[in-house]
Length: 305
Image (cartoon, rainbow, N blue to C red; front, side, top):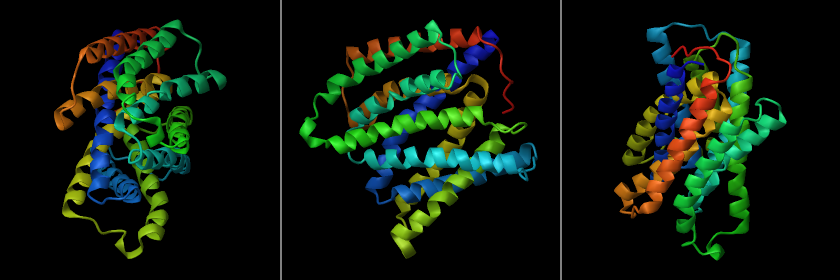
């Protein structure tokens, strides 16, 4: 793989990680103003699907009459909706610091599954990148987690929360390994988003009935805004998954840990100390090691974004 692609990996991971760090803040804000997790999944999925379809229609018209494409989108939606819905639930039950710590274990699950399924070879650079990234997250967040009394968080919620990174890791592997031949990132984004929204629609109707499509003006604006960001996130995510694989892609979680603390400083006046500098340094090292390992690996198909 070329050095340019290695730099592209870092740039895309930085953008993805920044959004992943901001997303919990926005989604928690949506729940505060009365938007339910089911509404977030349904309406964001449909909005993102329509936006990606329009983008595809006006730039490069492609057929969606492909059974394998829709089966792939349905599979992605199933693997995505469960951990996404779980994250929307636990984020209201545990502190953001604890949420970030648990989320930062996703690469460990992903790398373990990749080795078990023989999708990745053991590579000392990637192993070291995982260790550096997780260490950076731990240095930054474990002191914050100590401020939360264990009795305030039930064991059940903590165990349930760890299902989130485990299932996200499986989702990343599925999305990478079953990519439909000839499909572009926008096509995949459309079918996954539409399937995700439609799958959650029955749950929304059962839970809220006639109020399923009712929300405050602030909630509506916030949901449309975050859906716009998710359009960019989906394009970036599928570009990384297709070209660099699940293990590399999921390491963006380390950037989200650092960016989450930075967003906390600006939005909630949380202090920044030496831990952030050390954490940022370790994350940069992890990114460099991962990009270096990727540049030495066998080239994958180029992005068609």
